[in-house]
Image 1 (cartoon, helix red, strand yellow):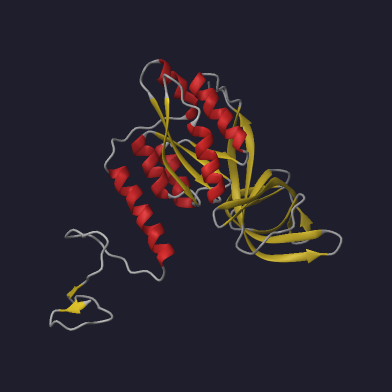
Image 2 (image 1 turned 30 degrees about the vertical axis):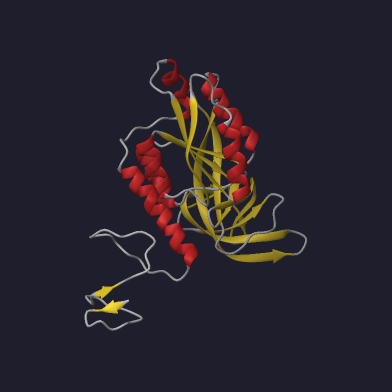
Length: 279
């Protein structure tokens, strides 16, 4: 960097004009430049901006897996657009390759974005403006993405078995998809501390941050946006009492069925599967 007097400088403060060299691409006037600590975060930030830019330049439409065949049969949809997010690169590639093979003479499978990590706001924006469905493999959306998806009615499908994702997309393309259940998230709790009890196992001391958690409900444990466990809430306690459910802003102890590897800052999400009349 060179200041307005032609001297080389190592840092520049607010309102200090400098000339910066070393860009891979020439920035335009008005572009925002962020300085970050490491290259990995810089790449993640660049990828998110690229997605938001793509989203802003595309006409806004939306489609769900349930009405996919109807649009195909009416000639309204010739390409099924998918966004794939997964927990590891190997899963990204496996899901991507498997789904890409499902196209036929009438419909093309177009994977517009595939990456490692949880589902973010930028993914939802891209899905909205690209008429895409989001496929999450062993990952979950963050709170902002979840709220935006609900607001924009973006279809996000969650899987932990590749075959199930393949089967759903294949049935949708062929017009055979007839879901009988939908997932309803009851609430979530953040793990604040752990209690190791001999003969019992690990009790997660939690604070309910949204909705409610219910004993016996299905549950998933989320760590850094990735699903580490899917099972059931085996035990729910408030102080020394066994309770059926615990509401937002209350503390409780949760024990998951057949799972002990709970860590502080994990999020336990309680959900149930309800019957739906959607075709």
